[in-house]
Figure (cartoon, rainbow, N blue to C red):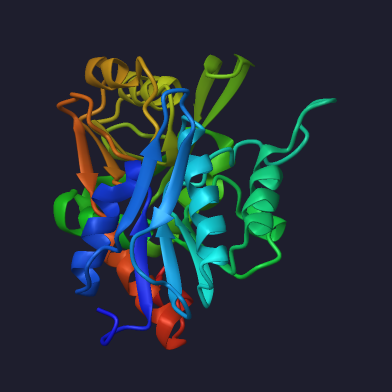
Length: 313
């Protein structure tokens, strides 16, 4: 590989499945790395090949637990100390992104803290996808390539769903901009679910703004955690006369009891990307791969080509 490309791709432990697919798309082998775990839970990282003078792409989503983030930080530090030319963090799912502001007194802004940690460790660029809040890009003082799963989902929507009777919906007001982009591009009507919460991960009340009677509804979201909101929205759509309800979401966080809720809900299917590994059993879940999209982004970063031109919405 050293004679063919100026870059190398490495992966953390729990994102190796995706890194291997990215490398297959790029036509290069995955870089050799050793992550040694100790009895007390501590671990160390070492590169098993020279990375001196290379552009190093480190693939690791920072989903819970925090070991994934710590692995990435150690990978960055090791690459910096091994004289890599540049260090690009490839984080398909950027964890702690929901903590993007002070929504009440005396709380941390977790997304900013993670951005500072990555920068202090030594990254030169970040490639990520569907941040929970777009303004998180401003937390970094290095270039951020913000990819969108819409390019993957749009192919699926056009080829697999009944466009003549389809309606785009958002499970909460915060996702209105995202759903509106799909609605405008596809020329479809849009409805909104308005919700209120008693506490985190618990929806108190929900109502629909718009008419879904006789329509096939497609709920659009950026992530699904406990699936309380998305399943409640789906059930509400059916109660209000929808013909069917499906959902797409970029990140399958799917904390328990999310899989059970999806299976028992009115959803016909739930479509995710593979930004986070999903191994639980849920007959309604379908996974679409983002490996080719990230591989193309890596290729364009290396060749100095435009990345924004990849995306329609």
